[in-house]
Amino acid sequence: MYQHINATEDEGDSNTTKQIEQEEVQDQSSLQKYETPNWDLDENIELPSIKAGDRFIMSLNPSNALLEVDGNNESGADDSVGDYNFANGNSTNGGGEGLETGIMKTTDDYLDRWSPSGSWWRDLFHFVGPGWMVCIAYVDPGNYQADIQAGATTRYQLLWTLWWTSLLSIYVQVLCVRLAIYGQVTLAEVQARDNSRLMRYFNWFVAEFSTIITDLPEVIGIGIACNLFFGWPYYVGVIFSLVTTMLFLAFLSCGIRFLEATVVLFVGCMSIALFTEMSFVGSDASALSAGWAYGFTETKSSDLFSITGILGAVVMPHNLYLHTAACQSRKVQRVEAVVRQAVHLSSLEPVVPIMFSFFVNMSIVAIAAESVYGTGNASEVGLTDFCDYFKGLKGGCVLWGIALLAAGQSSAITTTFTGQYVMDGFLDVRLPTWLRATATRLLAIAPCVLVSVLLPDRLNQLVNFVNSALALLLPFAFTPLVKYTTSVEYMGRFAPPRWEQLLLKSAAFAVYFINAISLSAPGGGFFGFLFEEGGNDVQYKGLLWLLMIAIQSFYLWWNINCMRTPISQPMTPIEEERVDEKGEFALAGVMT
View (cartoon, one colour):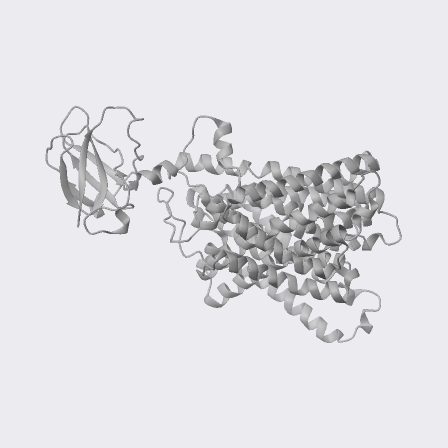
């Protein structure tokens, strides 16, 4: 078991030979030691097998030599494929013996690792991708439905909710970046690490459930689009949505960027159409500004269901799992200054798409506020009939159908990827992409077919309920994300300052508290009817009370238990790069 070592002269040109920056080694007693005699340049010598990832310390004679491993391992081990460079360490100048310390890396691995290029724009563009993929979900049918309901029932009064949830979403994506790049883990992995087997399976189920129900509005959107295009019954279009999954799988082999660009193009066309229609309806600028800035002063208890619907539609829990995995595709050199710069640039990347999505959603609120608000059935208007209220845009329903169809296609991407990362992180199970995509879509299709056949006029209400349910499930992802990214025990010196820790923990509590109120308060959409007039006449009232108390108790206990569960181990040292197992993050590489 030997490898051939070639000695080549260091000409002092850093561009001639790519080298790995030295890792400081405090305790050299545990390192493999290799003493080399004097040699002639280009002479082959034999040393015990060294593979990528090995720590080493080596004496060099002469001191201006570079050691390169040509990868010819006589044992035939897989880890000796490719060329290797030793780190350029603390070698002495002027002749004599040099000392090299570091970690063995492959040349190909090194070239794939990002480091600052000197151009801010070029470096920022390198990290563009994960944030846009995640933010496609912010202009999906679930968001459209929440926007329509907000404008149709309260005019501009709930714009403040849309604004603050968008800002929260930016902060959430920043936390995902920190966990992914500093810690080199996904949210699912870090959640599974510190929980019992039973709790791990429960958390996996909640994450999978939130991913599947995220797909419900997209499936319904495709059914509505087919109705607008071809006049098909909703249930036929819902079943047809399985075709979008097949298209996704077909295009996956050609490169996902083409599919992303197509979806963004469709949604972009719809965005232009919405902005145009917004100009036609003549939105009230003063009322819009008031609702945006201080609409919360006029919020009523009856608005609670709409507020949680906006929260769930904007800060979707599945995005937290998706973004922490998507960021893993951007490998960086594990040097602290480089990693910090990567976190900074990756944190900026989601800002533009989230702000763009805010204005798109605001245009829908404005159209509903001017065209739907005050009509007799305003509370029932939604995805199925919103385009009927377009006043100045010819072919508006066709463009509306294109947007719904595009959103359904994008959902096939995000929910498939998220489901795989969730299953991988919690259970260490990886399914074939085609199986994952098909299973997710089929599970979403089943309830939509039932509703579209039995209650076709209740599809809008189903999407409203899904949005509020996603808000209710949000703490199961957001609370652990805050826990780990604010923990000094886990993040070490990369944990935020105390004021930011307090701010984030307060935000996590606020998200829990709003949802806890919506569970029981009148107007929240769940058990609030028990407290309304006539609540005493509800059938099975006692059983419903017990169920409400049980859910509230478990909801509170889970959040407290999550924050108090000890962290078993800190994150991987910043200088050490995570070694991905076979197949791990393969989708992240395709996706971005």
